[in-house]
Image (cartoon, rainbow, N blue to C red):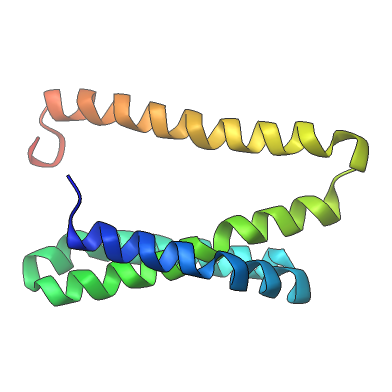
Length: 122
């Protein structure tokens, strides 16, 4: 189901890809990536509370999450371009993005198990 928080997150995420690539290329990806992870982590931790408080606060947090995650992928590519050997660059990219997909699958499977056992209210 597509909801307003999803649309705001994805819209901001898509709009920041080019700008994020330019920033990561110009200033380096390491500190940009760290800031993005911090911003996304904080907004993810605050999202359940924001959803209980007010809908507009939830939208604001989703936009901030989109800002953090929209710049994250270009910064990963900037770091790979600077830190990996050109002969193994495709292998490095493949391993990183396989890890992202594996984490998504593992998270979905573990979420079902946690819900079965009543974790955080089931």
